[in-house]
Structures are given as structure tokens and as C-alpha cells.
Length: 247
Image (cartoon, rainbow, N blue to C red; front, side, top):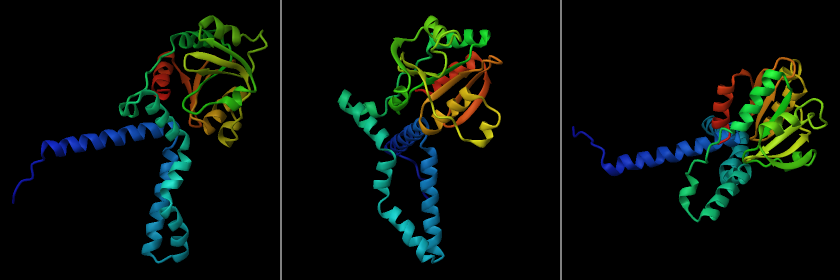
């Protein structure tokens, strides 16, 4: 029996495909699309099972999805697809499709959160990702200022009129403050969390944003992403989460 020895082109082919799959998974992670893909795969699995078992009505219904899957995919990911083509259009270079966005640790933000945690100043800070938060920004006060420790401490000082609500960060600027956000209706959270934490979970349930919360009672730092809350983080852990989740 002849031993199959892979050629250089075979290895290169595998590396390219693996790279494309990896980038696609990272894209889904950033936009919160994993759940959608799992749902579509589940529908496909049910379709093939129904076909084998001769369940005609189920097969006919899910057959519509099979025939128009590309249209469904485009509708579900229209914003992300538009973002990708916009990047290509700006750079006129297909390599931008695979280029990882620059990561920022937001040093002034981390310093401010550390101080607020020590002083037990309640805060809710939302970092915008691909999904724009314009409809929420309209409910607050526009300031469009560069991130600074003094500014963040002033905003969330409980003696100012701006401390209620959320501050929204776009790129390296504080775009708006005193923003009203939707509260999560998750029963698990609603029974034990305060308004700030519920708002952090609520905004991340419907968008790909990243929320940072400082508890006014304990000073503990929490983050929310994709509708899930992680509590009691250190500043180093927060720094790593910002790098991982807002790339």
C-alpha cells in the first residue's frame, strides 16, 4: 500500500482554509452570531432527520430554508457584511478582510475604573463595537470628548447631574453620557441585580457592545457581554477582557 505523502500545495490549502474558518469564528464571536449559526445548523439537522423519517410536512417547511439559505444568511448578517465591504472599500485591499483590528487597553479608562472601584463610585460604561448605538445615544447628553481619568470621575461623581445612566465610548472618545439603556428581563438577573447591572446585561443582550459596571455598594467591577454578566473582576482581568472582547 502506497503511503500518501501530502504535497506542499495540500498543506498550504489546509492552512488557508483553517485561517479562513478561524477568522469567520472570530467574527461570529464579536457580533454574537454563534447562537444564530447553531440555530441554522440545528434546523439543517432536523431537515435531514425529517427526510430520512419521511416526515413530509416538516421536510417541506424546512426545505424553504434549504432553498433560500443564502438569503437568510445575508439578512441575518447584513450589518456585518456591510461592515466588511466598507473596510475593503476604504482600503482597496482584500487583505483588510483578514486583518485583525488594532487593540487598545484604554489606559485612562482602566485607571478611572480602578479609582471608582476604590472610592465605591457607581458607574456604567458601554464600549461600542460594530453595532452602532445611535438610538440609545439620543436619550443621553452628547459630549464627544477624549477619554480621560478626570472626565470619567467627574461624570460618575454622585454630586453631578450626569452620573445617572450610562457613558458610551466609541473608539477612543466618550460620545455620550446619562444614556438610558433597556433593562434585562432575564428572571435570573432581575431578582438579584440593581439597575446598573440590569442595564449592562440588557444592552449586551441586543447588541455586540461591552459593558463595564462599578458597584456603588461594594466597589466590585463587573462586565457584561452577549447578555452574560461576570462579576468581581480585578483591573488586570478587566484589561484582558477589554482586549479580548472589543477587538
